[in-house]
Amino acid sequence: MNEKQRVIRLQPRGPADNDLKKMDLDPADFQSDLPEQTIHVYYEDEGLGLSVGVWTTTTMQEAFGPYPGDEFMWVLEGQVRMVDGEGNQTLVEQGETFCIRNAIPISWKQEGFLRKFYMTYAGPNASTPEISSAEGGVRLLRAAELEHDMQKMESTEPLVIVGEKPLQHDNILFTNDAGNMFIGMWDSTAFDSQMRPFPWHEMVQLLEGQVTITEADGSEQQFEAGDAFFIPMGTVCKWQTSGYVKKFYSILEVEADKA
Image (cartoon, rainbow, N blue to C red; front, side, top):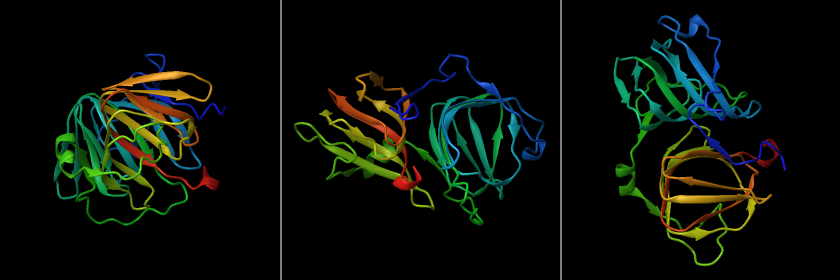
């Protein structure tokens, strides 16, 4: 089994509980004094432009400019204000989940310490689009709001169900400009699925319930509400739940010859 194709549990301080590395920073990237930033990358595919990990920063403000990629984030500690060219601010507080559209003109303004889980996609061969406004480019995922527009799913893809078909709903809040990254909320009644290769990259923030994921070698991991994990494309696994589950997700689809 490819060591990169394993289910990865995300932990706020890295897998060794304090395994974050100090980052080398470029003063040109900031309009403030240099902060101290640390990172642990759980999964990275440089050829694809995909990175998943945990990141921290102290007080700072980034230089204003195009945001470097499409990004899904869960704020574990602290809060941040995203500031556009007109001075409009979007506040994201501790415990909230949000996403940012690639290339919108915006600045990250940080007061105090922040820690986040993230999944970033920035295709290395893609040209940066020219976007004149940040309007609508920062989106907060709020379960109570997304529930109003949940749509019943006719298919259980990517899961092939064993036994009774569950009732599942989905609400895609964000689709990137490239049309291959999808962020939203999904829920399901209890189900058991077949062992099969996972068809895309996915980061999950589990909101309710429990899920047990078993891989091809028989290893199991159980995830509960409040956990986050990442499944690389091609990971052979099956899912099992004994009751209702709900998740925020960030999915990146990749053509098979580019995986």
